[in-house]
Image (cartoon, rainbow, N blue to C red; front, side, top):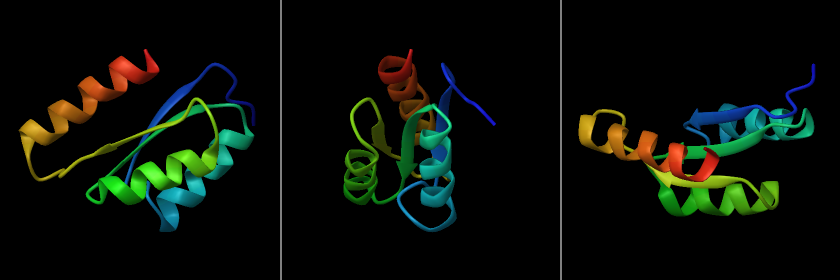
Length: 78
């Protein structure tokens, strides 16, 4: 599976299943934004993925927070 040119937003992406998905998608060529309640951990995970990958903090139970996440993804991933 190739994901060259694809942009992916992964919620719960700071670790666990989300982190594993992110790593696989990066290998397949995607650019990633990790979103997680733990913004600091998401940022660390994004840095570990390499240049061109991003992170944002999100509380998916908050519409305002989700809207900020989407705005961040549009800004950073296009």
